[in-house]
Amino acid sequence: MALRSDLLPALAAFEAAARHQNFAHAAEELHLTASAVSHHVRKLEARLEVSLFQRHARGVSLTAEGRQLADAAGSAMADMEGVLRSLRVARAEHDKVRITTLHSLAYTWLLPRLPSFVAAHPQLRLSVDTEIALTRFDEGGPDLGIRHGPGHWPGLTAHHLMDDYLFPVASPQLPGVSELDEAAHVARLPLISDHARQGWHDWFRGAEVHGVKLDERYSFSDTTDALAAAVHGLGAALARQQVAVPYLASGQLVRLPGPAIKARWGYYAVYPAHRRLRASARLFLEWLLAVEKD
Image (cartoon, rainbow, N blue to C red; front, side):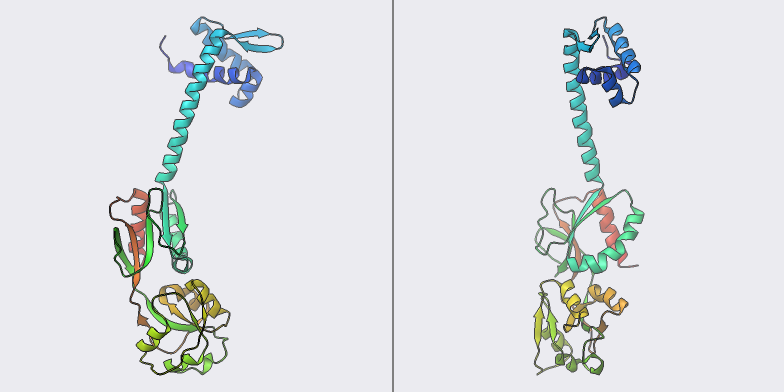
């Protein structure tokens, strides 16, 4: 006998009843009445011309034919559930964008801009990783990275996002800040450094200040922590423009005298050269390339 679509509700009711050995419990699972489950089972029995359950005062139990059909129906339902689950996972992965970037850039530049991307693409799910270590773009890893560097990395395609500039900042409450009126005077302050390639010596050289003694009193591995230390009045920090914007806008930090010198490195969107970007990651890359031009 060919399996027809009108038998599918009856098979679903039978499979649930066979698992529970109880029509009422099957009905509760399927959001039906017990009489509706019984009707479906009787319809199936009539079509097959076999008894699937033995009815007795204490309930029901499977016949030999019922056990044979229950095993096949249960196996088929398990297979279908597995396929449906894999399809849901595949769909979720299709709509997911995995990004890796620096914590400082994520906190001060990326996060304030992300609402515009989310509003344009509400179906996408974002995963942002801010590990300091350079991330491997393995299967299952990030789709895109935003890196601060020279713009060329073996095995990666790089798209230039923006340049950056270095200048000194400090809390307006830091003693001595109001008395500074030229770049050389910044050396009077306790200096905060991070682990960036360019530091205070580079800035003073770029500002054409020579022969001053630098008191680099505090050092932090993360730029965000270095700027937070400046906010709390520990000293002056050498800020990158793209990272310092929200601190300056809020008045937590002020620029100190002296030039903004162009950083040797810029920011780039990168991804494996051998791998074609998925559609969701391509949308994010196109947004990244456009957002800085707004």
